[in-house]
Length: 324
Image 1 (tube, rainbow, N blue to C red):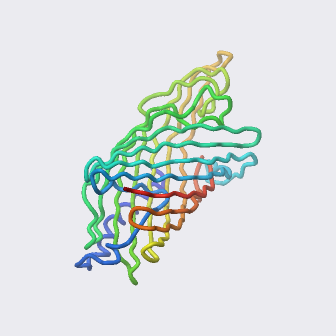
Image 2: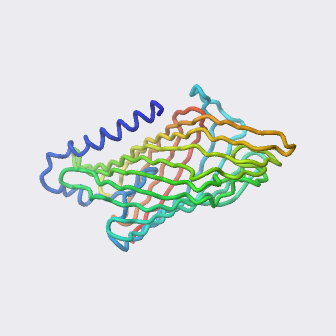
């Protein structure tokens, strides 16, 4: 576990315990908390929907510019031929019961770099979310939502004309996640909502790889890839200026074990690619405006602030959240 992951895990546990304690003095539901509207934050997942039959749709438009990479020592190296991408990503949720929700997250992207461009769909995550308890508006005690799902390999990953065409991993990937959400008032009647979350991702098996692929192989390659375990931790916060306007911020940490590739190239020679672990952390400030408790818009930017063996990027984005 990296130092950043240990720090995120410690903050996760500390905040989950400390945030409710900060609000224990409240003995009645605070009117500001009860009437506050939220949409974000940009990156944090949301709990399972609150009532059976509810349906929510939240389309994102994200522009991502690759700005270079971090080497094994954490030094940033700028790139001269950086990848650009415009991505449409939509969170679709349906409440099966008052506590159980199913979610799908389809995505579509247009990517380009010098002398090359590509269009296609990405892998498709589908998951179930179960909320064990509701937030306590009197004490600030958080709700707890667990999620379990699978990412379907619908995106292209091998037999590519160029690496830029790859938008998938080729593997069925399991996801397990946990989310804490707490809402409480602060001085001056400005409610704050905090989300602390973590998720683990693990491929269900090796991937058959042919020709040019997202795994760094070339034309004529025949072999297999073993994607590494990965995880993410994050803290998302929303500070209400008034009922409609909210300032939001996410702090994210991502980690991935090395991916191994083995096989033969087009000439029959053995190929073995042993990658390195990667880690990166990012910030995502945003501003949101809410027309009601059912519809709001959020806009901001996520940017990489540090890492090792990982790409760096700058990603402005906007999303419209609706539920009915």
